Image 1 (cartoon, chains in turn orange, brown):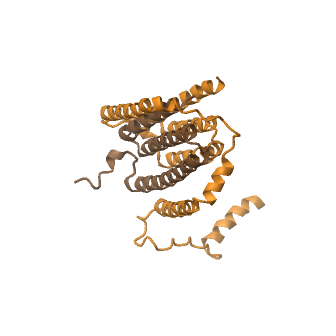
Image 2: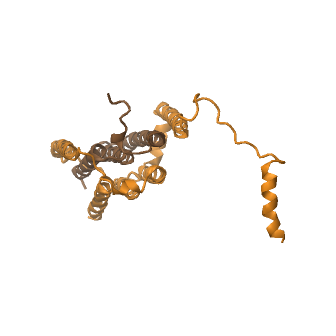
Image 3: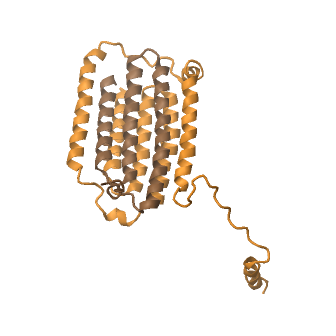
Length: 201
Length: 101
């Protein structure tokens, strides 16, 4: 009973926040709503007994990706864009595509539903699945985990290279020129001395 | 709650993501909608594994792989957004017509 109520509350908030992400005009609010929606999906994971996935969802999605979206919105956003229409002229085709996608998936659900009602719903059991996931990741699926590590490393290097900007220099592999070191007898000395004099007076 | 409830929530979430990815003008909002679709598929995966498969750890490990790929995608996509914003000075997708004939 409690799980049913929790399911409806969590999924209702998740869907409402997802609608807000898509419909709201200000992308700062959209990024915050995205964090809320991902938290609610994490709650659904916890409701299904996937404790490690709940922690991973909060850490990776809410803690990293939503905050990263917020940073990019704050870096690349404009106040003037808030007064513009947030949708292009594909609203009707997009609505049609969304409805068709939902109907196709719901059709699959209705087909599955008759089958799955025969299967016994797994009980909550002894709970935690973290140990099993760890043994799978370091045992039979260790190669996949190593490949994922390489993918993450490549994404990290590529993202830092892209975000630094390739347009500034001719050679993208050229090292970034170091900032000029201030000379001791240069302008800096003349700049410091007048600043100190009012303090001494 | 049985499997159908989770699958229907996942379907609606995916449909919302499809709508946003097609209809939004802001490139960052498009990436957010893609993240919504990733989450819908993950929810589908975990629900099907939890309620149909005897071993709960196997499908959750698959979902963790999917989350990791989604994180890498988001990072590279946002870096591309920043690079494009620096070049074009806008984040609206219809302005990115450099390759349009």
